[in-house]
Each structure stands twice: as structure tokens, then as C-alpha cells.
Length: 366
Ligand code: PLP
Ligand code: COI
Image 1 (tube, rainbow, N blue to C red):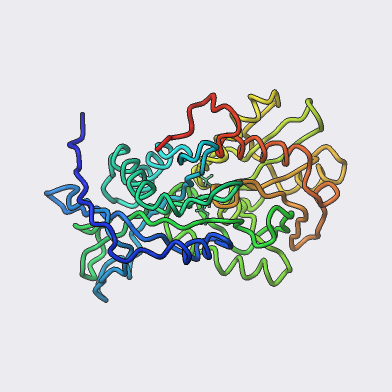
Image 2 (image 1 turned 90 degrees about the horizontal axis):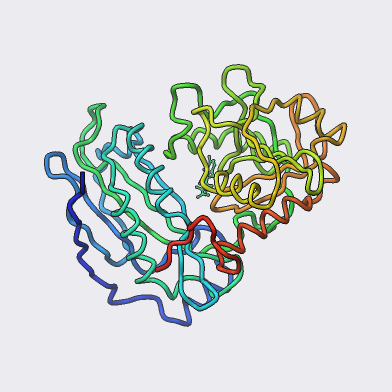
């Protein structure tokens, strides 16, 4: 079935930030602290479908106190990045994959599915309009945050009859303030992120709200992040707060790179999927498997498990240096970033920043 084309109304901002103010922001963007001059909004109403697509100035939303979104959290989001290319143009990384995951999240939250091409076009429009906000070089990028919220007033618990899809954009430096320094992680046995049949594979706000107490517990233990374990046995490694995990067994060209299999309770990361491909292209063995915390501990102790790293859009690839749990703590390798972690990080960023060929056709040129 072909979807009817949605035409966007363009309402450029009369007061964009001055070039000097923008350059000040871009000199130290941080993560998610500053937003560009515009946003895209599209409404959905039962019986009418998607309508009123606009590119308009970034501005607050008017929300009634009784809006369902404030009470029952029917909301989903995505995260993807636009990178400056060597010729000065801009390209986004796998926006169609984000669009498809957004549809999957929408189904789980009983929300309407935005057509893939509309999702991609909305991102394209915003990036083109605010292209001056895409940092000039290196690993820095413009982080796009498409999201959808219920937009109906009332306290009945049921799917809303109106929704708002929005895309905002934020220049992004390093997600972790310390850059690519290894993080320390806390294996969470007290709290779980997602149970079978729950919302773990959807990118929805509730999963992140539920993670915050566990993150605070991790910080009390002196750790940077939480590692989630399976809800049933609390034995198998699932993922981190905003990243998937990878385990490197062995060294050099014989290394095997394994990530927890998709059980329905963890987020199917686009970086995770991309790295499975990149690792294969580089000649490494790869796998998706269940990995227990015991295997993690003994693998580090006997040296068969050489490196562990986390990966995601915001954090790219971040080495895991130290693991703590209620039963003890240990270092991953010597606690420093491993050579394969560094090679994979460089290979992924080289594709994203246009410094390497793109054999999988992941870059979407604007
Ligand atoms: N897991 C969680 C819980 C996340 O929030 C993210 C970030 O999006 C990821 C994994 C990594 O997914 P992706 O690589 O698509 O950004
Ligand atoms: C992302 O990497 O896009 C994320 O969503 C992680 C976090 C900022 C929620």
C-alpha cells in the first residue's frame, strides 16, 4: 500500500540564534543541553490520520494538565545523528532503521505508526533547515530526537485519540563527560529494567524513568552506569541504561565478538546491529548469545574475555573498565580501552563521518 504524501508547511524562525551565539554553543555542546532553531511537528487524529505537518520555530508546547501523556506515559522516542562529511555536506546514519524501530515501539504502546518515509523526511527537513548547527568536524554531530506523545485531555486509561510527532535537534559532543575513558558498571540484581512480555524492546519513556533509581544505586556504589540482568533469573546480561553491550573473546584476528541475543526484553540497538556487520567485515567472528554474569567474571579472571564495551547512538562505543556487583568486583582486562574496542569505534566513526567507504549504504545524504 502506498502512503499518501504529507506536505510540510515551512515556517522558518524570525529570530534564529546569531552565528556568534551558535558558535559559542558548538565550541562545547555537551549532550542534550542546547537545541537548534527549529522543530518539526505532525499531528495525528483518529479518523483523519496524519495532518498539519510543519517545520516551525523551536518553542514550548501548550499542554493541558489533564493531557493523557502527563499521566499514563504513552510516549516513544528515537535517537539518531547527522554528521558533517568531508566535502562539507551532511548525512544521517541509518534513519530508516530508526523509523522502523519507531513503528515497532508505536505498536507496543498502541500508538499510530508514522510511515518510514515521513519519519525520514521530517528529519531531513529539520537537518537541512538547521544545517549550520551540525558541528564542523570530528566525532561531534547533530543528535536528532524524534518522539511521539499522546495529545488528548482526559483521565480514562485507553489509547489516546490524538498524538503529536515532534523532531528536535541538539548538537552533541561526548555523551560521557570524561570522553572515551572506560566506565565502571554496577550489575543490578535488585531492580530489573524489563520482563518478558513488557516494554523492554520499545524505546519508551517509562523504561528510562524506571531505570533512574537503579542508576542512583549504581552511583552510590561508585559506578557510572547500570548493567541490566534478565528479570527471571537475574543471571544473564541484557544491556545498559542507554547502550547495548559487546564482549570480546580472544585477541587479534582470532578474536570473537559477542553481544547478548535479542530476547524481547532489550532494545535492538542500531549501533549493535551495525557493529555486528562491521566486525564481520573486519574478519572477526561474531555471535549473539546469552552471557551470564558468572561467565563474565570467570572470563575476565582467566583472560579468555579480553574486552567489554557498550554501544549506542549517543555514546558511540564506550569501553567498560570495571564491574561491581553485590558479590564482588573485578577489572575488565587491565581496565583500559582494549585494541579491538578502539578499532571498532574508529571503523564505525569513519563510516559515519565519511572517512571510509559505506559498503552497507547506511549513510543518508542530505
Ligand atoms: N539500549 C537502550 C536502553 C538505549 O536507550 C539505546 C539508545 O538508543 C541503546 C540500547 C542503543 O541503541 P542505538 O544503537 O539504536 O542507539
Ligand atoms: C541514544 O543513544 O539515542 C539514546 O537514546 C540513549 C540515551 C540518551 C537515552
